[in-house]
Amino acid sequence: MKSTKLALFGLLAAGAAFGADVIVIPGDPPGQGFNDPTPATPVGGNPGTTVGQQALNVFQRAANIWGQKLVSKQPILIISFFTPLSCNATSGVLGAAGANWYFANLPAANGGQELVPNTWYPAALAEKLTRVDATTEADPTDAFEIFSLFNSQLGQPGCLTGNGWYYGLDNNEPANRIDLLAVVLHEFGHGLGFSLGVTSANTGARNVFPAIWEYNMLDTATGKKWIDMTNAERAASARRDGALVWTGKQVTNTIPSVLDFQITIDTSTLRVPAQQSTLGPPLESRPRGTLVAPNDGGGVSLLDGCEPFPAAANIAGNFVLVSRGTCTFLQKALNAQNAGAAAVIIANNAAGVLNIGGTNPAVVIPILGITQADGAALRASAPLDARLGRDPLTRIGTTGGYARLYAPTTFAGGSSVSHWDTSLAPNMLMEPFSTPSIGSRVQNPADLSVNLLKDIGW
Image 1 (tube, rainbow, N blue to C red):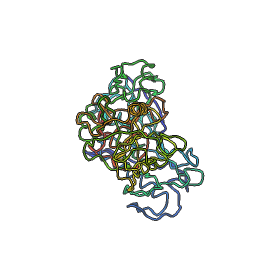
Image 2: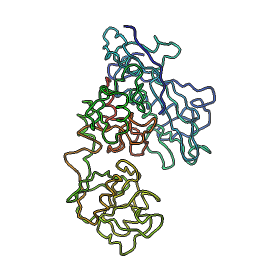
Image 3: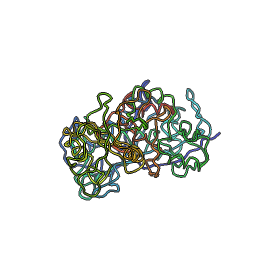
Image 4: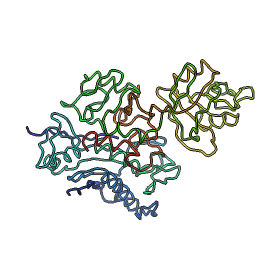
């Protein structure tokens, strides 16, 4: 059977015996992007003396890190552009990458492995398995396995003003900089195959064949895998928060050495899952106390903890429940802490368990995030005796023992399905949002992302 090929670009030399040759090919014109001659001071182990050279050094370091984690006898070429992308003063696109080609029914060369019939594979994986240079055969003028774009305007006036890229290689970016290496590692991961690919996550529709991802995606609410669903069932599953999971053996077997135990808030009638925030210290034991939901000093809402609590609020020594919104998490934490709280529980104002990032040495009590519904249930029963602790039988970010994929109730184009869920802890490289705690490492078993790639054939 002749191979079937599909060119696709999605937003967001023979290899050694161990590893893969991942090579960045700059695509920018002279004087722009990777060829930007603007002088730059070496920083964080990056010896480049121009902005363009520093950017290229970061991209190749990311390529080298992935190459050390994967095995392929085919080179993986990444055409990359460091160019202006959509952004404004407060938000913007950092970067995007995807497989430049997808292949199905590609015959294997001598020593290669046959692909699952009638199934789409990203180019780099298809070539690794079959040992065929399929991209060159498909189009010698477009023989790249991965296509990538990254925003060269970040931090300039009108584009996330006040921020900017950190070009260091040491994961030591200052507070007003975004670690370019971590973002490039994430996007290259999509290009290598951490993506649903040609099947639409929004509508569930396929481009003739299913994607290799669909064999390991399970909806725990229906008990069906995506490979066995209709278009409508897949579309519904993509919006079933907490129920869409990855069942691949490599990931599942690694969960115990990667994910933390689930934190719960236990009362006589409720067991509420919670997310530990990096804003405060970790729970050291299983503290027990009274959970209260007091009114604060006024403002937009009496429930948000954004104003100092009055003396009559009965907070000293207790666990304080407040609602998300109006002010920063730090302000809520400090108001409760200053009133003597033993811990702060913040209920989300949208679907899903609230994941609270950031760090601040001024916060010395634990901060937990919970769902909006669980917050309402606790508030309705407060005050009540409660215990905070870790469930030794459940890993955080899992359902039925499997790691969750990102499937918010409101579909998020470019993010839904093709990322780990934000409830996983510690944070994973391939989550939909960049956080400082992810860092610029792709390490097994400290991250499940490499294991997912192994589940699809890497």
